[in-house]
Image (cartoon, rainbow, N blue to C red; front, side, top):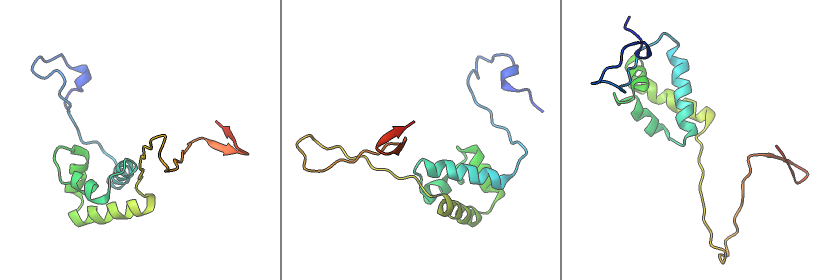
Length: 116
């Protein structure tokens, strides 16, 4: 097993290069976590599936090699169907605009008063 980067001597030709290593674990759990994370960032199934085909994304690429291509696609779609994809839209209105602007607040409200 190779030495951990934080424990090895500084190398002038490789001062900041990240090294990825495979770790034991449950591939299905990793797949679910990654798909949920990207779905919460607003990525759709096609964008997420492409991550499994790109060697520049080592975690997803390795999972893509372990699982079949259509297996990945169907799993991604199933996970997103269960968790959803975060979508939002920002509307900027000028003060003289006739458009009514709504404000969303993440804090909970009760009786018109904010709790938290």
